[in-house]
Amino acid sequence: MGQDWIRWTPSVAKADPRLLKQVSDFKPVDTPQARDAGQAAATWLRDRALRDFRSTVTRLMIIDDVLEGFYSLAASRVELTTSHRRNVGEQPVQPAALITWLAKRNGSQVSGVQLLTHALGTALKVSEDMGIVAIVLDPYDEGSAEVWRSEPYRFRTSRTRGADGSVRLWRSILVEGYDAGRKGHC
Image (cartoon, rainbow, N blue to C red; front, side, top):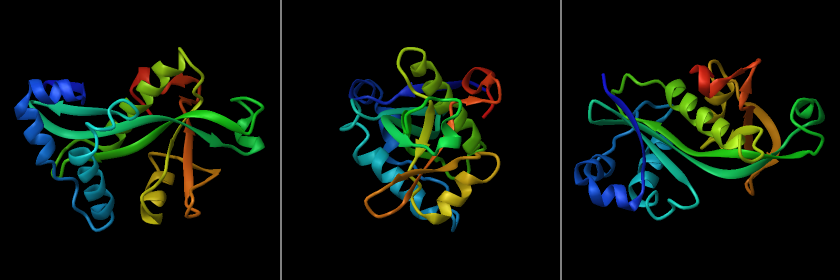
């Protein structure tokens, strides 16, 4: 099974019309729990990813020439409690990589863990050159937040709140003494 990760940019879209069509036709997981968030992610991928490519990096997971899923990352920050900061620094606000979108194709055998693991690995690589201590996300809704807090994802609630009062979830990019992205675990 051939697997590739492709950074989605205007030049890639121009060079690969077949991939552009797959992005345009991307159908996310369609379960009651994920339907709204998945549709929002697919709309963003189709309508905004190429416009936002400088501020939000999108990676497409391609297996056997099929777009199986994607995630997007941007620079951000997160406010942590004192106990959460014990291994990352003294300041309450810490630098982070923000997962702006993450979705998989309806019917895909790819798991959310596989997409998250690659995002963690990308954040870990960036942390080698600039300070990033966490990966964060702003859940689409409370149902999504519960999924991200549960196993196997284990995100925690931060002190950071959106304008609407929603929570920002976070987790360290280092997991229990090993590099998440390098070992393929999260």
